[in-house]
Length: 192
Image 1 (cartoon, rainbow, N blue to C red):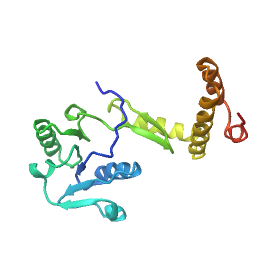
Image 2 (tube, rainbow, N blue to C red):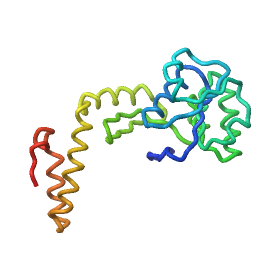
Image 3 (cartoon, rainbow, N blue to C red):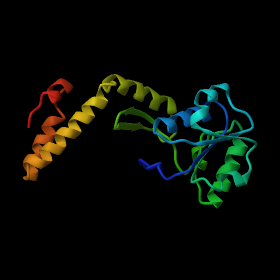
Image 4 (cartoon, one colour):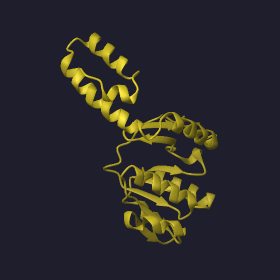
């Protein structure tokens, strides 16, 4: 069973093994969170050129020694046996591994997600129905549009002021609960 968790990527070295569409998507996801990665493959999809300045590339076939310096490994080749071999090696070397086409060989799975500034909503079916996770994400995109990142920022600033002003925790909690019911325009005009 998979447990939902957010991981601080700052001190992790990540390698994605594969040069196709899935590897590219995984790579872009890490970049969206400000994390550069290394990508290993004998050849790369042309679209990797769009991000070549942000990624370290190793153009070669997979060799066990390539994962030694990495903490997290994404096995995203188009060969199921190679992905499983990568997973087995990672387990022996205590590396955190995700096999994109086989959750049974994975230590973790990546969720579909919606990111609006600091708001991060992860959606998962445990790797069983990725298309459903994607549909739910699209539905949530309509509810939580791009303006929602502003909402979170303003609410965070107001929260700090509320914490300063209200020493009584019950009263503080009551005020904070009422704030999340306000619309963005109402928050912008809110005075403590």
